[in-house]
Length: 300
Image (cartoon, rainbow, N blue to C red; front, side, top):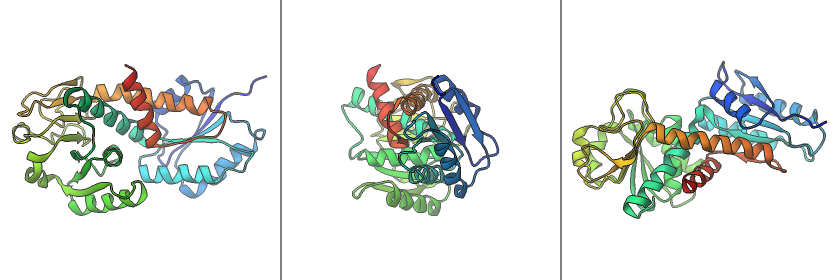
């Protein structure tokens, strides 16, 4: 009798995301077990309870890390990896609040639009990330910087953005990557030099105005993960998929939340299936999410 695929799903929050549970079942996991309000120090015990209860080498068990803090999720995933006792092993996948797969979907769609409309990639482009201190914005900034862009994380407080940029440079990026902080109010000082806008602010708040689009003479692509009106970028519809942006003086194209969401969904599904089908333990984070998001976008 074949043993079932069991996913142990941990989160620092008091509830597990129903979205993630549905995704795991739809990806082929037979059982999903929630662990809520989990602290970092508890992860090792959960992992080792899971691996020692099944035969050595059996890779039909997984750990999913949710929550809201992307840095805490990465720490938990690293603990999961370090807690292996070969030949007793387990796989892990972190996607807190869907931030890793959403950011990956955004970056993959922007790359597609840059190539299609401007024969460009991220290398040496000027990128601003609104809502950059949030989970999606932070990871999108890291992925854009790792792809060669000169990235500014924007938020209400420059000091917080500077602190986060320095943390990400130290933890996630290689030498030579460019990631700095700035405040939302600073945007007007460099709007004319921006090539790409990544908007991941709070729902219903417009971050890029109609006047900003007129001033953004070099803008090529604007993407927004907010599906709640008004859009974070003036003139950008949630269903827009690499179509010219209304009001842009530079002929920029826009990518809305639903176009990004489709790629996010596919990336998360592929990662969950990769866990289920791998013959060796895998530990998946935002870099893996971007790889599979790119794969999906290029296959369409």
